[in-house]
Image 1 (tube, rainbow, N blue to C red):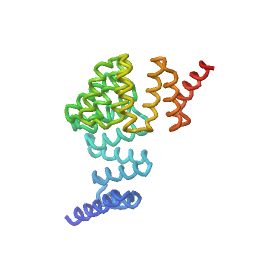
Image 2: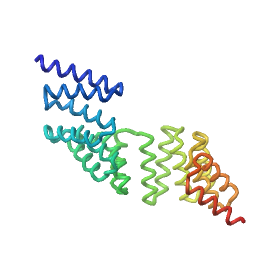
Image 3: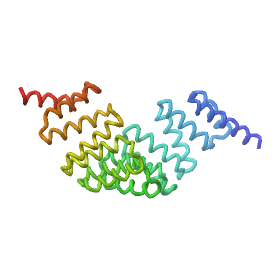
Image 4: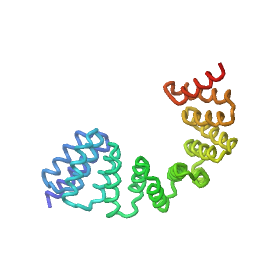
Length: 258
């Protein structure tokens, strides 16, 4: 009983240091817990989190693997492995880890959201769409509607994408990304005046939104309004002088007019 009380006390002290971002010190306490009980899953999990936060994902992964040796169906460990793999750009492995986590913790919102992101990087859009729909049944989050809209655009369905962006903006009308991506869907539908209005909304919320300036410029190019397109590309380059697409399009406009 005394040993159980001691390891819980050590864990609490480690967690407090972790919350203060004193990761090295927190690991000392988690290791003391593990000296008392090598199978203390909570301490292994916190140690993994601390190591990952210190930029040592491989060592964090080792802790999650130790947890899975103790409890092969531990959803938190599989989720942690998924996050590490995703941050390392190992998206196939991330999806596999998230699937293992979902086997034990069905319809977990965070896991579904992160799985959808990994699937997006893999361009497995139909699976990503299914994952987003599952997550949206749990929580009507504005950013998920934006993500679903982006997937539908990739799948060549801007009309349904537009509906997603509108649903997102009903939840949060102050999201510049939703306005900007809505503008892109409207361009795909050749509703150029409405798309320009959406880009303006995005830029009113975030005047330094480079991609909104750039997409607004592209829309003016489609309308054969080179002067306004050039202004947009120049605004984008004021914010990011190294933004190659805007540099290229600006040069092409100037070359065509010389």
